[in-house]
Image (cartoon, rainbow, N blue to C red; front, side, top):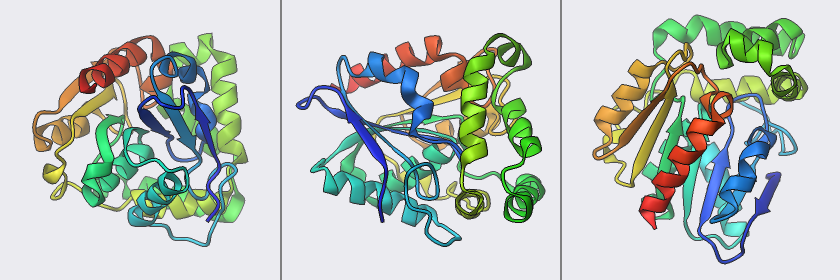
Length: 257
């Protein structure tokens, strides 16, 4: 499978892999790269079904998605990496750390969950139905942005929101629906206690998609993990408050050196 990716930063530096949420691309991280490449080699990639990566027939699984990550690392000659994942990316990271723990040096799990639970199933089923029957409609995109960013951020940073909304609108609806089937109905809760790498859990205080209670559950299960709640942020806290997220991430990564 072809995985579209970008590799930036000093060739000899430790590698940090950045993985995006459902429905967008590696470009979500464009504004984070400059700060990270001062000390790290930064790998970004489009998850299967997204961006410039292949869109194989679905449904997908987290095992396939984590397998794609390891295939990409192998193809680039990268033995181990720090891993930063938002939402869907966090689920991929947890699965990867369980499958090949020696290759994941640390995890930063951002606005993610080990299990969405039955209460969210109707929302996922509706999104699958819309994507498969109507495509990536403006209404679907707008509903997503309303979960990802606070009203204040959407009003003040229209260009940022428009850029991310356009990624979502351009996503292949087949890949989008297939990826929902990988992440929407799984339960990693019984397994994540086995994760043994240093872990930072980040969540927006007002995240309605994966609220702080879900982050706390991960924090309680992964021994020694740290947790950061970012005030006045929703589901895409890493973008909404990059000014708080990046220093916390860099401090966490520096502590692993």
